Image 1 (cartoon, rainbow, N blue to C red):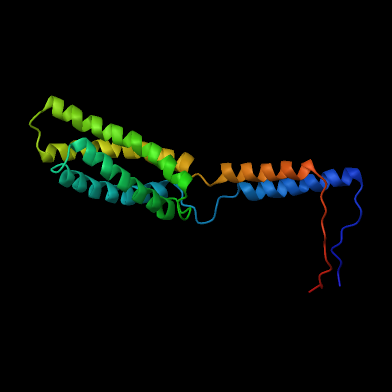
Image 2 (cartoon, rainbow, N blue to C red):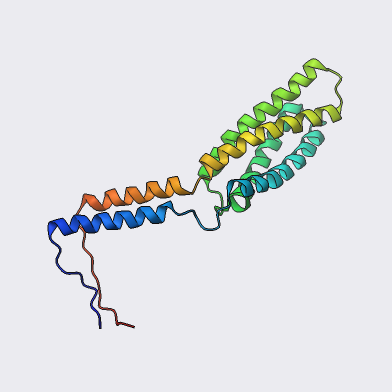
Length: 194
């Protein structure tokens, strides 16, 4: 049986062992997350899911605008579509699993900006062309939503659902600093050699 109990280390050897452990942790942290899509694949998924939700939202806003002011209809649909879109993007676009409250709130911030862009675009359309019909309203809304969506993609990828190298490296270096702070005790048990 091979013993895994490490010999007593001298102070200099202890520092070398810690450095080797940190290097191994940093190397593992630098590897891309398996299953995480690249930027082009995630953008394509973002367009499919975000675009699908956007087109459905556009129809829903048009339907609700007959019952209430357009800005109120846009606000209600934006809230519902943001919750749905955030969940779809977490699970399928960026493959991070279920979206937590933090991701929903951060996504809501980017959706608020998108709401402002689409609302201002349609309000400007009505200022320029007061008798603009539903077709022009929809074209304007979808064009503004496309522009705002591109900005949202960047925010979601770089900040909200960024689970790649930056956050992993921060966690790894944070753990390494914690390990240095106090004494460590490691219990190694004998393992039969295969």
